[in-house]
Length: 236
Image (cartoon, rainbow, N blue to C red; front, side):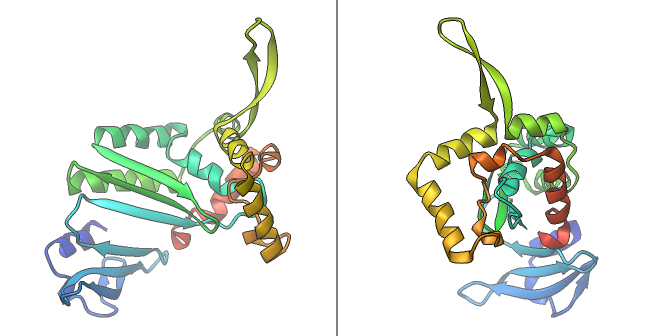
């Protein structure tokens, strides 16, 4: 990746040829601006089939990565992984700390078909590639614990009342977010429309975020299985 980027930053997009091999990548296309000047190219990693688009633009070094994450159920697996990968476990917490020290900024969102991650840094291209490597490693090789999954997804906690009494309460970042979504009319409407259009059991009929009743049943084992089936290079 560094070899490709180095050549591209040197202004050699116009020298690329079809099917050219650079390291383990093969050239698939060149991108031109309105003046016909080559400003980018698409490469494919031959061993894994990972697609890499590089564009030279007048901005901070930045990346946009997405993973194809068709929901296998109404338990919210895609949205849950968005929350877990880049902030939980020692690997995720390292990425979060590295981003802050690298003058970086990032965000993520889950769509019906894919989960998207994007970030940039004002510290230059060298720092950018270090951060890019760390983020990809966290997405591919997370090490969050089962307890971290439960606390992020849905768990039962104790809440104190103003009069000093205590009660049990459902908690969890993902759970609370989706309760809020399904309390609004459009959340339920969109979910029901998916079932009407695609039919029950179709991947696009499921909620990628998960309705509250589905999130309650999500287990750490199911999250790990979903991660293994989606977060690999030829699906990104």
